Every structure is written in structure tokens, then in C-alpha cells.
Length: 110
Length: 116
Image (cartoon, rainbow over all chains, first blue to last red; front, top):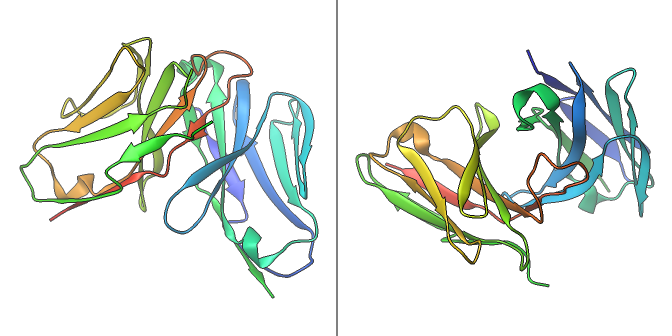
């Protein structure tokens, strides 16, 4: 069964802290996406990874294909980073449909 | 470049009615995917359209249908609405089919449907 698990489910931190959100998946993938959803519903695609590491501003995403694991890091976190972060995976044997993790609700306190 | 737009943004319907949602992809994008987001089920894939043809379909009943026009705009239709259809419906566009390696999806703001 193709599964995507995210942890933690909820995360509250102080402004400035280094944040890590994890995503594990079950079988071979073609790509892994990290997305951000703010209150109100709009979803923004942050990264798409199939290997290695990507960086955009204070956000860093890594993926380890052998361990079937990805992490999203936020450096120098800010209250505006408060959102739900979602990991979604495109599995090779599911006709590349995106399977979504449950999301991590991040709250950054000033 | 304008982003993905969805209309309407909010919609209230009653059980038994039908609804049509619209999605305009980013200019030049040929793939449009639809997703349903509910608090209990999270995000679930509905279907993908590419070049006016449905290429992929999720596990939803036949009441959920869609189509794509020659300009890549897509509509999603839900007939005989049920209370459980209340959700945020998101569409995402991409230049190529979602199965293509390196293909990234860009999401619209969503249409929030409430069924009373």
C-alpha cells in the first residue's frame, strides 16, 4: 500500500528557532512535493524533489531515496511561516497520482 | 504570468443540487488536476486532464466529473450534491502531465463548497 507519513502532526516553536518537518513514504516514488497551506486554503508549492537537496531562502528540503525519507527545514523561523506544511508523493506504481500526507500544522510564536 | 485562478471562491448549495467549478491554468500549462480537501480525509486526487482528455482518475463516484477545453481551462461538475461533498476543491496546473519527471504543479486558491 502506498503511504505517506508526516511528523510531527503539530509543532509550536518560538520565532527564530530551526524547524524540521519529516516525511516518510512506503515504496518507490517519481517525485516528492512539499507544499504550504495558509489559513483560508490557498496552497503554494514549495519544492519538488526526486533526489538530493533544494534551498529557497530560509527553506531547505532534502530527500534520501534509500531511506524513503524527506525533511523540510525552516531556518530563523518567523510568525509568517505559520501554516500547514504538506508532503505529497507521486508513486510509480499508482499511475503517478499524488498521495498526500496528513500535514504538519506549524505555529511560530513571536 | 498570472497564476491559477478558480471561480467561484465560495459556493453554498443544498443537497440534491449540482455544481460546476471552474479552473483557469497558468498560460501555457496543459495539465489540470483537481483535488478535494476535507478535514477528515485530507487532500484527495479527483482527476487529471491533459490536452482535453482525462488521463487519471481518483476513487470518487461518478457524480464527480470534469472536462477540459481547448484553451486548457477546466471545469469540474458534481451532481446530486451530498452533505459530505462540502470541501475545499483545489485545482493545480502544470506544463506537462503529472507523470512526467520534473513536472511541478501550481495550485489555485480553491473553491470552498458548502452543502446544506
